[in-house]
Image 1: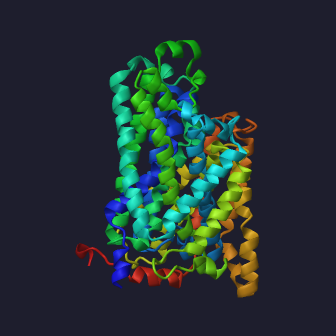
Image 2: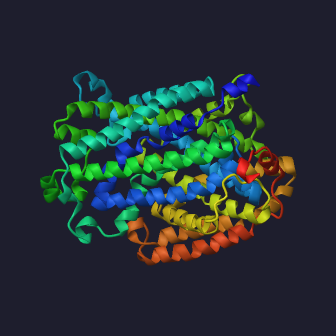
Image 3: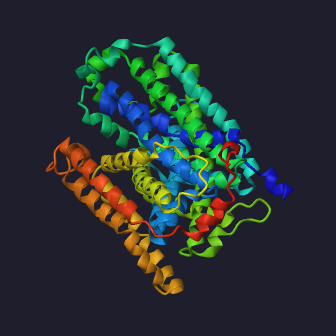
Length: 536
């Protein structure tokens, strides 16, 4: 028992782990891409992304505090709507997690390929036409192996590594913000009217949020929740860990965008406009133009360190998500087996590594990997608002350390925002991601028929809403406005109106489709929750 206690994660380590996941390759690529798409209005894109993900996160914070278990986000939907919806949500979430690992490795290699030093010429062959080459792919494989090995030998080693990396990842973006504002800040870049602040219209704000990796940059809040079973005082620290890490991250990202926009040479803007801004290494390139070579060196270093640290954190999260999925009996049980000394799901880590290798071999491009992550994550997140309100209706007596009164309106609000965000990922990405998610259904049906003799297929009626929703969002994406890849039969902003109204209908249908009784496994986990003294 003493050894198990020794491995517990503190609030500080939980926040550092979350920041390590949140501040990854997104800040290195996002600000430059967002400014190119939306101009100064990209600032609003980052604020919008924070609002969306914090709204979603708060629904999961209530669930995480109720059910503090490793890989918990892969199980919540099952507790309210049965194993079929639980499997869809867990599979979609897991797809996004295993894709994050190679994406961060690709980001490191991509920045390595642009190192400006003569001794680093050998790295220039790692990229060609925006894609990882075969030599670069071998380096990506090596990085992913190291990510896995750091997690392979205990939670303690992983948290010590992430604590060190996370401090660096907070300090360098902060230093970059300060230096760019001090050295070359041009207030005129932000425009003098609504038109000049928003040069490409309001739609560009939503486009930038989706295609610039903004939403993806925020969605790692689940790191704290998935590690909930290994945290000290989870009933308090899950809530604190998520909120603290999300607020710190939002401030850093918004200020980075402000600093980037202000640092652009006004003469360059006058010649090319925001669409013409195209830096390979945005912040490092600007630092060099401003004569701060020392900052550029630090940024090139961080372009290696930040994705590296995030990759380590997501190996931990992805392995626990996969191990948790075995509890429903729809995946081989050996995937959930824990190594006895450190209580780590090593088999799941190895399988994740193999599949990550396959994924990056097929998609050798950072933006392609980021697209898969965003779409699959958001589909998984649809179940959070539905589950949290369904459980309130199913059993009001469950222990809820975090029980905000505003959840009754926040849950449908978060559901609608998630629907809009899925739409913003653009056709054909929407239907491609849905196709990847549906690939998991044959696995579910195989185990359902083999071990439960198809009795569990009754649970399908609790999940019809999700199947209908996936069809709906695919159709709207196809016929939607051209700015989001559609045929423009449903023009902006009427496409938003249709999605908002229909999403509220789907939300009500989803909550009404809940099971009559809560899953017994949920009751067992909830029974172990310690409520704060004032609530007892």
